[in-house]
Image: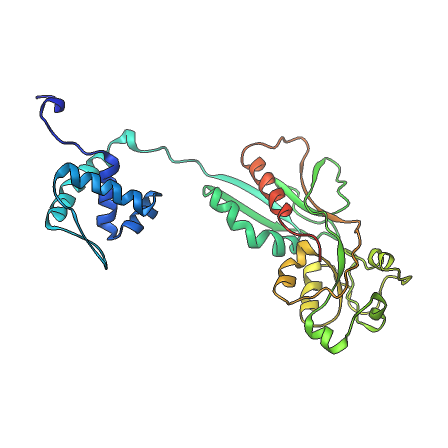
Length: 304
């Protein structure tokens, strides 16, 4: 058989053929560009190069888009067979990437307000990951013992674990606009004297009272919330004023479900930490998750 180089055959590049096949199948240069991760202009240039090589127009270009010419239809059928043959070559098939797994234990409030709304970002970067998210009870420090990571709320001292600070929040009072209309105005901290103060041992009022110059004891009357998410739901429903932090309440503040009536903030004792077994080094997908979550928390504003 005579070598191809001696047969004066005009062989187009595979890139131009793929651009043509995609545009012909999808009926649009723009949709072909999305499929091939190119710009519509780049797809158009490749098809123009192919048409110049063949000496025949493959598309009719009009105001309503592109339509295959008769030559284009014939050419599509011919290259379709060739592309199927090429795709069947075993060496062209990539080995299937093995799936990875990650088990994460988180507090309910952090999982709901911080992690949940952004978790799809990490999963899109790692489509072969199977991620298991399990809830813990932070006040009692109860949660599954077997995990790759634990998101804990506290002082950051956990025996046998490496703790990385995720949020360096300040705390401040917040309430719903409805509550403010019914029980306001709240112009200065002492105006809280006759307000219904929602309270939780997880985020006590005392640090903020001290920062605001109020010599008041920790509230004890009424419901004590052992989950910050439940306290925030009660505040959004107009049931009182709560102590919160931007990492949790940022969305509710941005959407107007909550308002912060004062500019005074306080430094709390407890923060969120990402913890992992000190005997297991961070590598691979575990390292990627750690870096991603720390970056996510850095992007979260912490002022009211």
